Length: 436
Image 1 (cartoon, rainbow, N blue to C red):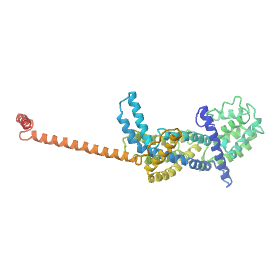
Image 2: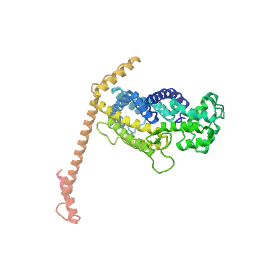
Image 3: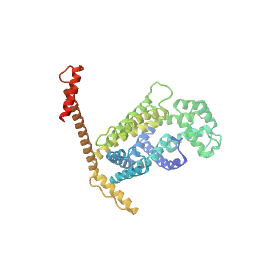
Image 4: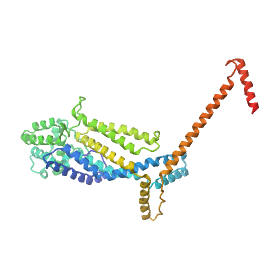
């Protein structure tokens, strides 16, 4: 039932978050049902939109942090270059102190950007958990699966399910190659009874593709009518533009099918979303050789390719979420970029410093001085870099001219390579240096 293999601690954190997100998903499904539309794909798209809107303030904050980091990077890099190759404790402490001073000047912290990601991570994991296990959270969907469970076991309620009630269904899964993996393997039913057993049976049934549903009706002839009726409703809810959301786009065959559109769209939309994000985080001086910049470029290629791979191997419902998430992210990023491009960075820094000072005041620490024009440091660094480059070019040109004059002087008159030329070169050398 689980999507990621997590520790008990992370599971305990994600549980309440999953319940909240699951409730949102349930409400959205019931909302569309009120208009006569019972479709999991549409619910996933609406669910993605709602979650993105709820997380938008956090996204803005993270993007501001990234924008500031891009401005700060030249100063931080200059400090790193200053202490490059110096690994003694004194130098490392000085480097850390100078780096911390840069962060304080801009009113941020060395963990500011990471904190946003740490907060978002359990939300994202819980979100995948909900989408991976739709029937566990969406009651109208679960009702159809429970009807099948009751028909197969002969039970009248989940509470009446005893240990071993799912043995026939487990045998069917083994005979029909139904994958039973997860955090807690669905196949491990030792000591499982009641509602817990019903949930595991629903998890198993949610993995069936249309052909396996047909086979299930044949394997349980006494429940065939109930299975067929509910399977039709389940497949209708799971069908999205002709794609079964419970099945993986890659079914073992390399013959393309319509479901392959989802992984392809997932990769393309995530690539473009990453490109827009990079446009916001690029440094003013456009340092293309910066190690961080190069790493980001590599990640912007690797991550979309990973999206394609995951969306091929996971249920199509995950892929629909992935595509919808990237599309909304693109729209969101366009808005964020337009907002940040108009923002006065000095004003942003001033506000950040004020917030930092309030936190310092609570700890009894003196306030940091607000730099009225912190971005001027970057401009000064650019001017110095330009002057250094101009000076270097001037030296190269002067050296080149001297070489040309010397070559012309020594190669005049006699035939090059002759004894006369060599003798003349020595004479001219002595003449030239005697004058000096």
